[in-house]
Image 1 (spheres, rainbow, N blue to C red):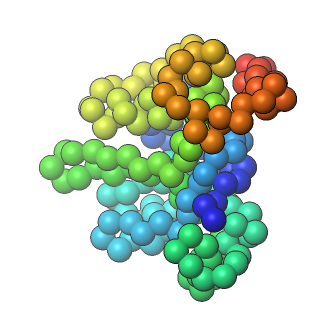
Image 2: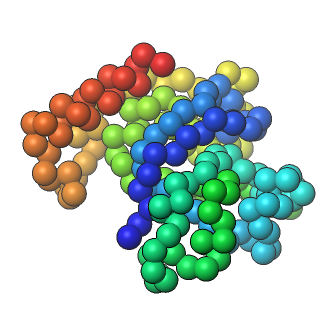
Image 3: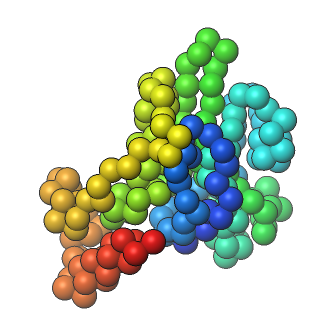
Length: 180
């Protein structure tokens, strides 16, 4: 089973990608126990011993997401050894030749584009990788409405069960993000 959980991002690092981003909490499919280039470990990246890869979003996944039988989409001994430990779920790197990259394990919940800080991280990561200067306070964009988000879906897929109750819950969630 893929790891869907509510991640809390309480410590936003200083980086052009994170300019103007405030701490936030959001439900999505967040992978963890990532394997990074050069064999770097999560601990090395978090300790900033690497000048190549920087952690952008870090959270502590619920232990329940790391437990379970061994399998390709479930737990394993290495994952279970990291219970209660922070995991990097978004990162960036800058290569020696100046090329830039951004990794992000979320973005499975389409409605999250309506959350300002979530959207800001993604937009600013795109711009940063393209070598565009990010203003000190970041880039603000208007939040899409529920109707706008529906327009961008070719097929509602798992959202095809968009009952009136589910739609009301999504609208309420989007509205709650406006009061931050």
